[in-house]
Length: 289
Image (cartoon, rainbow, N blue to C red; front, side):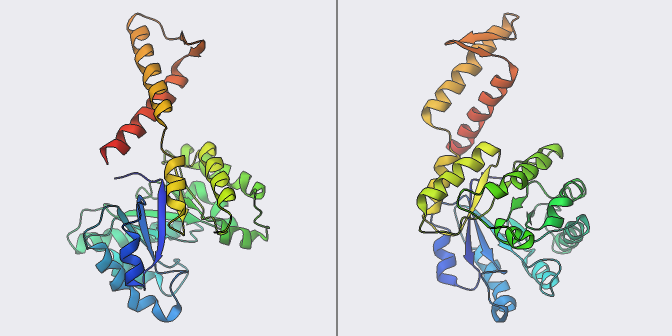
């Protein structure tokens, strides 16, 4: 479907900002009907978001609808399951029934509107204690979900945590999201936004940290964040060259009957080869774009 390094938020009720968002180099743009959209603007912004998705663009297009617990969720889903929409972001998912209800309604709307069943992606944001506690159930009961996102703003509010610069308080919960995603055969998750736009150094450190924790990308709220995240999640030329060398050397050794070798003083066996193959695959996928 695409690469998922950078998701850039833009308010659905600002056509000029929406139009510009699609040109800034993000892998995906999220037009927001939730937090970035005032209550008085939510309903009238639905068709604006869909229209924006149906114009020519060079990246994926998502719409963040309102949580299933709100009076806006049903209308949001009915309005936004339309041709041209690549996926929906569903915030504050706390249990499997919320995800299943959204999935069921999306499927019926796809069928009614002649769309390919299951083609519109659904990404839940896990941002409460209940969401973390029920994550396994959420992931195992909704095939449409291929990956989830972690939302630290509402999560720290829910647990009364202080969201610190080094984000130590988030480590255990981030690890849980990565672990449960893998345990249920989902893609690596997407990490939370970084809200201190003046702290570019802290943002870069956070991005590198969550990459090493096993996330595949990050939610962004400002254009300046896009190149930082894209760089962090793009293998360097040196990494690709090393990975290619490992894959090729191991293939030759394996053909000769060996399943472990030494390469430039490093012991190479299957786990290291699989990691190298992943780097090569990511590089090829990005090059194809």
